[in-house]
Image (cartoon, rainbow, N blue to C red):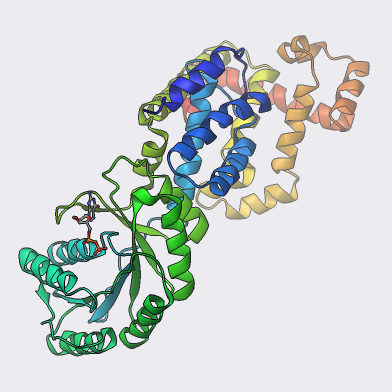
Length: 446
Ligand code: GDP
């Protein structure tokens, strides 16, 4: 069995001292373990490598809260990135089945689960969308496969095109189109012939059928357990026939779903459905979150980290509110607020979220109130000593010069920051006397 990723990471991070933020060394060590986990989950090597590189950039410097370990934090970042890649441009759109009869071409290798998936989708469209569906098998080499589709059709109460011996795939496709139009069908599924592996004859045949059938969707069915092979098959089919989506079957098996990640990363085609068993109901729309959890095998950790972050932020808000109420608002508090603003999408982002603020946002930008200014202010605070941050009144002219130079800015910039801090501290004090401070801070920290 796999040693779980959390166990591995636990080992790595026990040896590291806990810091406020993830260092690059922490991240690199942790991601080495993540890479092994990805490979064990059948993610292809180039995809895993690429993925790790992106996560390294994202994770380095991420803040670690006190109730979770850095390892858990890395896992959360990996998990979020997995979902991002798997989800692609957004939720997989529903099948395009308007303008009846809409043809859906099913392609894939023999044994991938193509016929089963065709019947499963037909049942779904009939029951969930109230569509009138016609099934047709084009597998002229395997009479048994044609029989099988007809049998499944009967089982799910969906019509299938009568089998006529001696017809070519193209002839069947043509007859199926006519029948679908005459019979008032909404959707026509064409279940193409599969081969054991990709060959020219097969591709030529699928192309010819495609040209006749003008499908709205061309769905590739691949066995989710075949890992890298599944990706090669998808690349091949997409290049030769052009696919609009993928159905990954056998996601109920022992495989850990890595094929999904490779598939998405390499082909860029959306995974529309996953097959989860042999029964006719065992199919579901693709859920990136579920697959990401499965690849990592540690959904609980992700939930834990989310919870810890919430708690931490709530505690932080509480602490800050108490400090402010007492009139305590030092440079560290200001820095935290500035950082929070950047995290929430900066000045532009914050203002963009508020109705009617678009115009003001432009004005603020013109007045130099932008993200660069936020970063400058943070840099200035960073150049101060701990004592100075706690009590900025200590700052003498010579120190001011040094601090401004340390941040690559002018003393005037620093004076502006100090003035702003004073005003905010005043405001905090006044508001703290009312009871609204706590709520406000909590809202601000989101
Ligand atoms: P085809 O040759 O591509 O048409 O493959 P079939 O549809 O005949 O499926 C081959 C076998 O795989 C059958 O025994 C199916 O019941 C099984 N199968 C198909 N999809 C799934 C799935 O999602 N999970 C599991 N466990 N078995 C599946």
